[in-house]
Image (cartoon, rainbow, N blue to C red; front, side, top):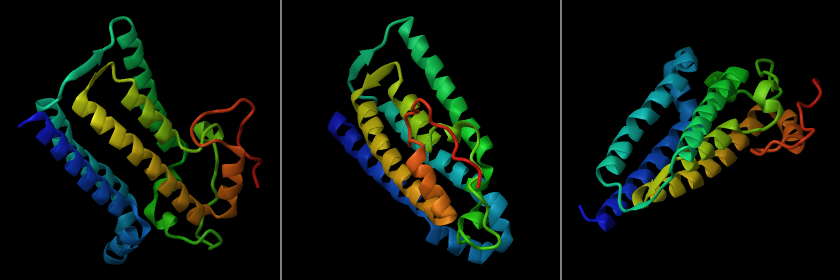
Amino acid sequence: MSPQESALVLVIYLACFAALHSLMASLPFKRRVQKILGDRTGPWYPVIFSLSALVMVLPLVYLVYLFPGKILYVVPSPWRWAMVACQVLAGIVSMRAFIDAPHRFRVPLQLKEPNSSEAELLKLRGIYCWIRDPFLLSGFLIIWLTPFMTTNLLILYVMATVYLYLGSLHWEKRLLAQFGDEFREYQIRVPRMIPKRGRSCPPAR
């Protein structure tokens, strides 16, 4: 496979992955799944969603492994290890984000109206007191702190960056639908990705 062909296959696969992943993350799709499966949707959907994303990413990783393209740069030691350490810290940030707000990922709660009796409050704590989307920050850090770069890897990272940002916009739109004015006030007070001095959780209501 030529470099041009491998790049084209990579772009097409990424586009298909983004389309399917976005469909599974959408509220209409989740409503349809909940209508079919009922209460079983709540505990299992996040697991299935994550596993399906992993399964779809593996061929992509293998494709880049087989056809990396031209090497653009390799970061020398000790800087490469510093970059890897920052990537590990970014992964820890992602895990912490799940721990600090588990109710954000429960499908039945995502489908409730903000003022309904079964809706939950935003319950801000931990890392969410400093940034609204820790997954966007950790994703960017893991991507761009890779201590080497090839042409196909660069294509992958640029498209992933765009997708992550658009996904963050979609995520906040869903959170706004889930939490209403409480999340709107939170957006005003706390930055999306870059922490600012003096920022903290809004006062509890």
